[in-house]
Image (cartoon, rainbow, N blue to C red):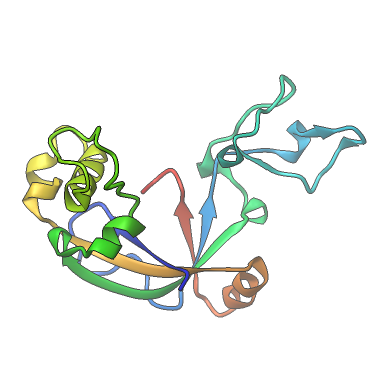
Length: 173
């Protein structure tokens, strides 16, 4: 149905990070148009994205996502639901949506086909070494569950005028 779950990796603050109806624009590592040459010269409307696994030639370099201008954004998400839940209350479908790979037998400490173990390993791999007691999967912290669906740039621009815009940095999960 196009919906994806995303967890915010921190204790649940009193106020959710976004609300239903908000539009998130996703920043990515990118190359600036003035650094991107084509056969016809420089195209001011052309952006390259590192996620596309392209190489930026010697004339340019990748810019960090934090510096990406809004006009370069190509991914827009509309929040469809926000709720708080305990991390270990995640469903099997939720583990898949989060990117856990139950078919990866290389996950240390977990048996093949163990989707919850794969999710726990994935979650714990994102936690700072000093935080597992408070934020690791075994600690079962409260997290925000944010459901969203991908929308077009045109829909995002219409929603922007209604005060539903927020920013999501693809490098800050």
